[in-house]
Image (cartoon, rainbow, N blue to C red; front, side, top):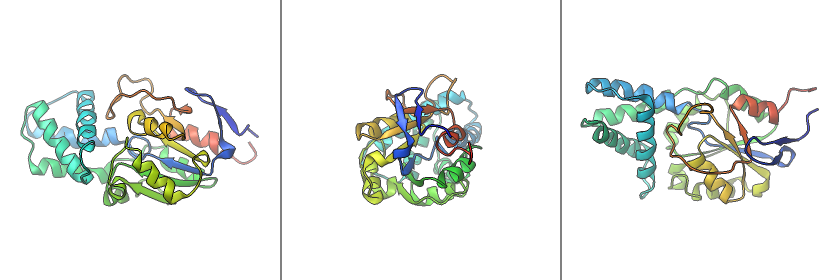
Length: 247
């Protein structure tokens, strides 16, 4: 039987036996939003007779989305409309209302990472699961169809009326879950949106480094944080936290 402690790739030792609830970011961690974003934006660019490198599109998305989310709360569909207008301005075209609608409507079709559903099912056998996501309720419901598990708590930006990296989103989750922070473990890809605020609140965190081996920070702004543990994917996390019976 493996030890209930694991040594983190970027941090110290994490005592899994102390944890009861895993809280997750969704997009970038469980849902492959970079593929989803690019699959939605590429056809729009072609309609305007334009091309742009994928990493440039993701970098612009990160900048424009985080800027829009830092203002007074607006629904995520409106955030995406702002992002699309910004992409047009930066890349040299005038984004239409149809372009904005196409990006927003694509969210429900963004695919889950192949390892996410089985990992979540395995983890659900041992832990309660929660979502803390920068999204609207309706859009998350569409994405959740791809994940194959029922979460015990779902906290969206629409409910919190704020967007991560605001700590308010985590505080709303804490209030609903009703456990001390030492019983929680936050799992996320984005250093900027998740690890910086979660660590500031005293949470242990797991960095699911989906971009390991790739330069840049993709669709999230760059940030510096010290997660407790780093894994390359959800499958690895599930193997650590919920090893096969008899292992």
